[in-house]
Image 1: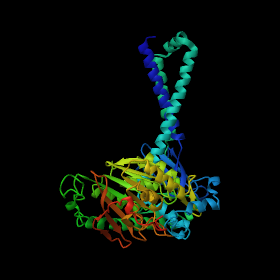
Image 2: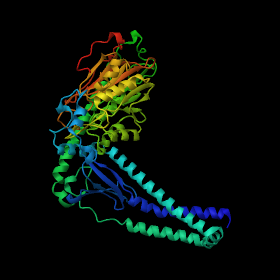
Image 3: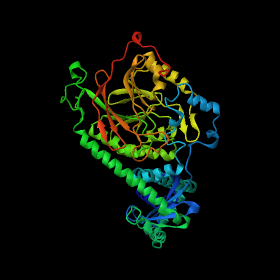
Image 4: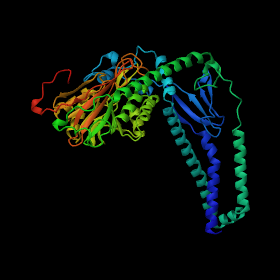
Length: 557
């Protein structure tokens, strides 16, 4: 047999193998993701409907023709609600471990503030907020499912094709060239074409059997006029769905209405905001109108950063963050941590929504807060975020240095340690690393963890959050610190998602590209009354020489 025919036969064989294994790959793939507050497993079906299986409670059946193509469907098997994101053994921390986590530097907050939405908030309220997030920002969940299932399907398909092809190659080696040529001659031409047609017909027959339309759904009237119109509920779930769905829908509607109005007020205030701090007469900011410094009124010698912290899964405020980043022409977004509530895998959704709301292509960076986890950091990196982990990263020409908070705050357990170092020990370690590292600005979640580096003179500027109150910009030790208040409006013992319970703040920082020093900051405040205030620019003070340091106080250390 000629080499050309041999190659053609091989290609046809590969095509048949790929075609034959595709249905298996599609319908056996499983993706372990989340659904609202739950862990969940997703898999494709061929019934053109979304089936959400709640186990003994019953199932929710949603028509899927409009958003899942080719007659395919999706089944979601609902699992438990993760509490801490760690195993039972890992979750059993001793009292001494918790003292190490809480003690030393402390949080700068009372025990009641340690867990926003903590013990005084019932779990059901938090679950309703999580479900409502699916209504307010469904695209993040859709993207997560598409990415997870696509990865599993392609992995299985590639594995199946490689295994079967490998077996065929092994058989060919055993048979040897002479016998293999004889077999191939017997099946080339019409015979091989016939085999291919038979394979296609068999697959077509199987596909027709698999894609048979199921019985029509019996729509539940509770969903009329909602995104779930036409859906059916089975089992015991039917007895509670009206109340539960109404609660979720009301929460979602209230949340959307609140932040729609906030965004409208933000846009109305934007054109009237103070454009410059008038520092140009001191040679700090190029005159307004020089260069292309976005929409901040500054020139090309300035980099603009939007800085948020402690959003605590408030996806409504994520919309505000995205809008400010876009309208300000920001060069990057930086986050001081606590994007989630406890850092479980289900709360990766909180970061996904924030990521989706930020302008496409905008560089973004974060440090892990005590309400985040290593799971949160890993997920952020998978989404393209720069994550500071005792490391540096450059954003818009400015080099940032920082590291994760060593603590992990878990509902019902308080703060635990994710590392072998206490907060005190980590603060000293960070100071040592800062003295050995070249950088412009430190980004750290808790200002007290960064205090030794500032006092030693190894860090000139530091940005942080965690305290849920604004501090500075002010001189501290030999440097300057600025603490952002909570961008999510995270009030102690109250649900953060939803309309605000306390003021939320977001900052716009300008950095001189020549000196790499922060010049000034403008704070945007959103109140529970939907009022948006954009304050005048506040200048950063100049760092002090070591000899001019004021004496330390217990609160500072």
